[in-house]
Length: 168
Image 1: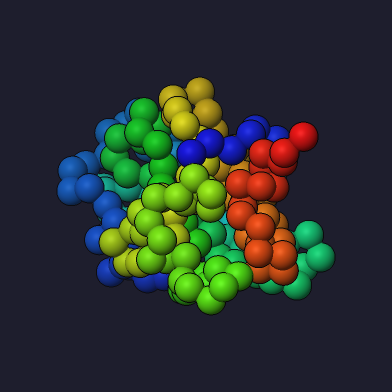
Image 2: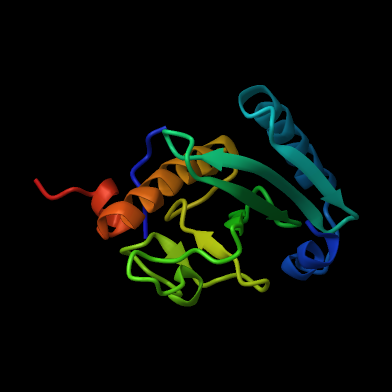
């Protein structure tokens, strides 16, 4: 599952984290990304939960601002070498055009999503490969694209992938 590049709770968060401590490298990289996000997406909040990792949350809207979601990015103690988890925290249930919950779909190329996380949130597939040279601005930008494609899916019934990879 790949997308073309275009450029609240503490209990739930702790269940999403690996149990080992963040090192100075991870803390520095998270701090660097926190500054980038504050510049580009100042409405996003930063949450550091002990030594286990960090989380960013923020509102995302579709292009005509009719549908809002809360995006959650979780960076575990392996970040930036491990890919952050990107999920839709709210609304809790994302329905597909035909009414079935997207949360139960699991891994899907057509919907660019992975298995739901431990608290049942839809996880967005934001890249096929990840390394420390990628900042968190990329998954946030891709989440905006994904959310707009999801809103269009609700209107048309077309898969999310059809908006990223249209047939010629």
